[in-house]
Image 1 (cartoon, rainbow, N blue to C red):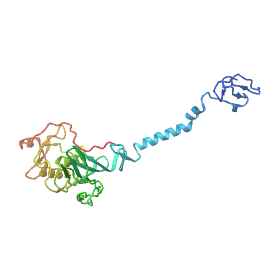
Image 2: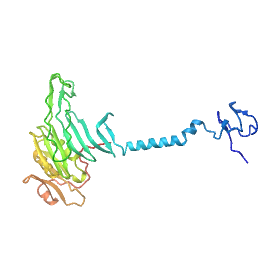
Image 3: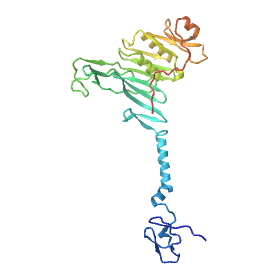
Length: 319
């Protein structure tokens, strides 16, 4: 019967046939280590290093599988805090199943800040707090002389909190106060909130003058899915910003009509499907959004664009 090969425990040199089974022992010709062919404890049945034997053993494999499972769950099923653009952790916003839940806050551009309340695929609330900015013209450097005062987070529903008044201007000695600089301009932004209160129920509250219609429509697009859009585009505007505080509440059609009427927006329409013969228009006599036949829209002098895929300007969260 042929015996399985045995190897030196020190250098893994094969020792088969180098000593008789009944001999008192011998030494490895490669490294000089003593072994007894009759004592299996002095030799080994594998020619791999002990570290490799351990590395490819059952426990390391189980550990590696567990690590892979944890990592996979961390990036898919387990909730985790979101990361800001600079790599820091946004503890108020968490990702679960690749969907954001919580509050995302960011300064967007030099003159405005947004707070987005996420509850899944689409935001349910976008809020911009009043922010005091100081623009130093000599150096062309924009510095924030105020601070973001925080956000009230109200769940969608009739018990949503009323709009928060703008924060008071910073005074000398306040944290973040920057003294007025020569040839500088202080900008006070209005506080506003757009919230989705139900399946087709929205509310817009604007705390003062100076809010651009593009910012309002950006938030309105962000709160709606693609099948809730109207297929309209802005062709003109009587006013780029509002001149006084205002509020609007109702369905998506009623809210859009209120914004179009407030800013005097001129709309162009587009069918929502390739085979559709209807478009959405704004009807000035009733101050409402209506769905009419393409022929009627054209008879009213409304520009009707051919159907085509459009990507609305909206907030896009990337986990």
